[in-house]
Length: 366
Image (cartoon, rainbow, N blue to C red):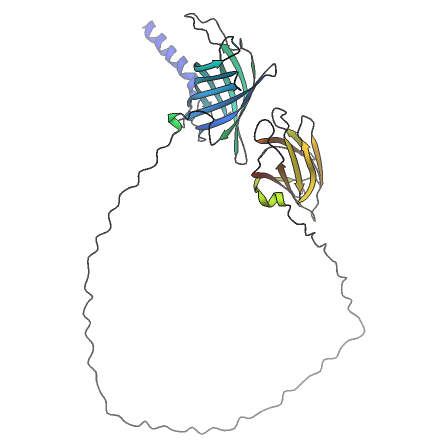
């Protein structure tokens, strides 16, 4: 009896951690590409190929590489928690390793948070490394290979071999037979017999008409009171909007709307930073088709743009143009908008084919 109760307790203990995992409607299946950076500042490229079965389970492979000096591929398994949008996934073992630097091989344990900005999707967070030892008794622990920061973005193509679970077979076209049609003879309609009547001349009576009686209208001339004069209100000329020609870079590239921000303060401050590693991303910024920043490099110090808004000037459109893609494509930035007590964080991605658009709308507080 005691053994049975212990088994029941053990079953519930094992069940509790899984009770917090809920089904996630967002499918993470696909290719995620970016980087991880160690605490010492060493930078590696990173790619995930993930399979997400629309429940808490996730699996896949990871590729980490440092140009020609290091390359590694590992299998992964993990889970996703809907409430916190957290993906916890760890590498099980390495299946391919090429290294000219020597040393031990490490596997990683990732804690990443899902987010979306416009049409761009991100997985960002931290990692801990562990020495992968080929010993029967493993004495390693997560963190003995250090840790750092991770940033990944969903992409459509891989730099490596595409895993079978990401290959989609073309759908089979169903063979449909043409519908069988049967000829239906139209019903025979009998025509009614033609009845002929003898022709006769109709008798037409000419009516007697009297000439109409016409009366002249009586015209009454109103008296005009000239004692008081009506003064028309002065005409107020509204300002004519300035017709600014569209710059060629806004015509030749697609302009994708990232965010619409509604502000309640007339004074708006826009700050632009590099989002991630400082990799020489360079941008130009147009405000209502006017060039306000030209070929400026994104750094950890902000590029600042100030806006003045009111009810007569209630909308502005900011367009960010990538002048290059930096060392790590694409051109990414973090926009922080401050308006009174309001604050907005917007992640922006632009390429040589696509500009990023953010619209500002002013609504006077009640």
